[in-house]
Amino acid sequence: MKRFSLFVMCVLNTLLGFAQFGVQHFQPTFYDVDNSRLIESRRDAIEADNARSRSQLNQLANVRLKVINLLAEDIDQELRDILNAYYQKLNTYSTTYLYPYQYQEIMEISRNVDNAVVAYNNRVAMQKQQETESKKEWTGTGFALNGKYVVTNFHVVDGATHILLKGIGGDFNKQYEANIVHVDANNDLAILQISDSSFIGFSNLPYSLEQKIMEVGEEIYTLGYPMSSIMGEEIKYTQGVVSSKTGIQGDVTVYQISAPIQPGNSGGPLFNEQGNIVGITSSGLNREMFNSENVNYAIKVSYLMTLIVNLMDIQVIPNGQKNSTCNLTEQIANNKEYIFIISCNQ
Image (cartoon, rainbow, N blue to C red):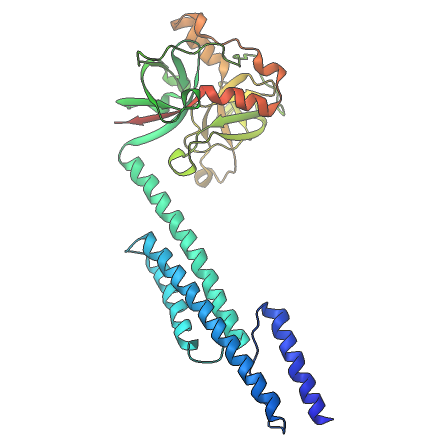
């Protein structure tokens, strides 16, 4: 009976190892009983399983080492410390049986390595973004009027000595030079003109400029290119509602909106449900300074209309009706052909 009980315990331990760790991995438990053949058989199985585990872990270590070598020669100390701990554990267990808790410990360190690599990549990406900004290069968003004209925020092009547009007609391989022709600094508006002689101009725009004041709670959406150097050149959609018809301290020139916007969204269009432009996205309230969350603003399109009527030919004002018969997905497809990345430098 005693021998049978010990045998059952061995079997249960084995099954528990399978269930808990998902690998053929046995805890080496030996009993001083007269059952040498069972013990020898179990020892051989344990040795074989541990050999496979060590091989898999070493392969895993080599993969991570290659990843780190690809990242940079001068990795930061946090990542270096995690790697050192990882390889020390591998070395410690490389010639011994791997108990379940040891195997679990190594795999936990392995996951920490993965997380550290992701964090390191994010830090590198943010550093590149900051380096780009420090070189006096920045981006924003703009949208088309009729002819060769493009609208954006004044703060997007303020101080720029060279302005390029990308994404016209959905083509990001070709860039067009543009010049500032009119500004309304008080309302943070600027109108650019494409100076490239090969560009024939915009026509048949799918949207119109809607001056009717939006009501609180009405749905809106934005299209733009936030942080394009990191997030890529695919247009980004965000949706929300009009949170208020006024801005900071009752500023009547802007809407407060709940649609999230980031750096690079500035100057992009704000659309209503019918796919017409009701505003120009401009800024968000500083989260750290004001302890706020997702408080953003868009300039009412009526102030753009005033700028155009006073200084330009009203023929540049788009009056497209195409979006009015389209669903949201179709509206976005129509609109994105006329929304661009604005790249500036000094």
